[in-house]
Length: 605
Image (tube, rainbow, N blue to C red; front, side, top):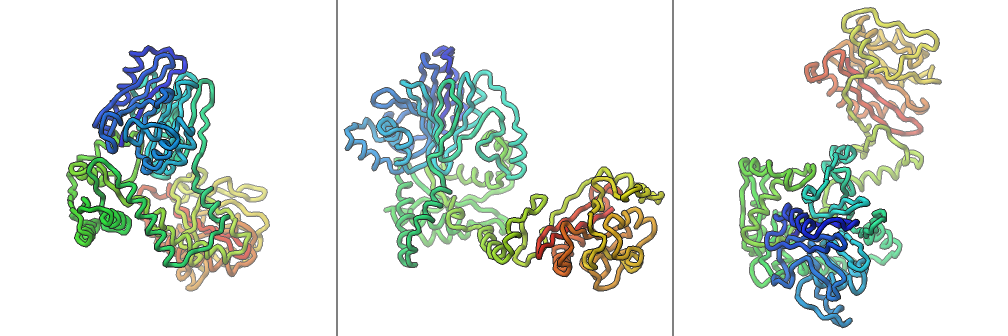
């Protein structure tokens, strides 16, 4: 990999010496990305400074040094990545009358941009890349990133200037860089364990999205343009409706594609190797490498002394079968402890992938032997290797059996379908304190007289733990009514409305038990909602829509998911952080069948 960085001062108010100093400081922060060489190109008249740190892979001579000028001196490029089919594009350029000065893929890309334009050149290119191209004639800067976003590229644009780099840390070297934390990015990180493009941890900076080109000029608003979209390609393939090949033809075509892909990535003027974990993806890559290599491929794997995490034995067997030159490295806790303090400096922004530690360790081992290493990353995404892809297929079959109105039903709380093959309730546990019920619950715990209901419609205040009132439900079906013992059944006949069910304090202060008749549908001892261990626990079922189809609603509430959740709530001790009257564990299961949307809430005080 290489590192790129630069700044464009649209006012051209920065001197040449200052521009060079800024450029050198910026690329120095990414020295680890390109240890072989580094340089800065400056043009004070236009306020431009482009920097580059090089890791030489193709054309190790000074002819591949960057930043690089085009043959007509109009364009200057700083490039990070590799164009795998650069030899094919080179032949096209030579056929068009362009003479090439060196053998690097950077020069091929630069001259292709000069001849055909940036977008047309990128469409011809197969590879991973992130680059900045400065047009000296139009005073415009073009940023581009590869189709899958393998190479990173950050930028921060203001009316006065634009700065860009391979890593965010390079922006610290730019004058007047005072970033602020983006709260929305933090929320996204807490949800996804990484910060998705185009956001960064800083409000002032953005990531250039994969498959996009951004052209910047003075006085214009940055508007990235997409040149490659996976969804559009998939839709076009469906519309084309090509006839499916038979199994043998499909295998041959896939084998040809994989061999070509791996063969292109083996083009390098430096030692080459591969990561080998023993899994399907990396084993396939290494096998295809060995099939196209005249000498043993150097393979590397990482192992753990804990048997549950160790894959080194599988990798060793694959290496022996393929005949590779294999190297192993076993990780100990001290190795991880040495890496952890350095993670923040490498990633520049929060990133919670636990594999970052072993990835660094295997890369450190590999770098002692080779410069470039291939891996099996992306295989699971391309060939549906994760378990969630199997679940998606099962969920699709379940949704097809549901009535069309329910397929588009919106389930509250951001809940996802879980264990939907049995149509079990989706359960989400939320723990917290409901402010409106704290005083009442404390009074109940102290055996004080519970608060009297308000006059009029006898409605509880908003956000009561037992739920808000439901209009038009004065006659509940038996299956949609709470049953907490026989005494509870006698005290609350079916004609009582939802808001007439007593509060927790009333149940506790009057000594009601949660023991009911075996087989009751609600909170009885034999029912699925039984909650043992405290007379102040109950299970309340409220209809969220109409009350037709009560029998199906009963089946939903009786599902194993509701039973296990209620058992978990009952067994949770009061010392777990939610004490007595301040604890309310709510379990909601949303589902829809036959026009019913039933909501179960298990409240514990």
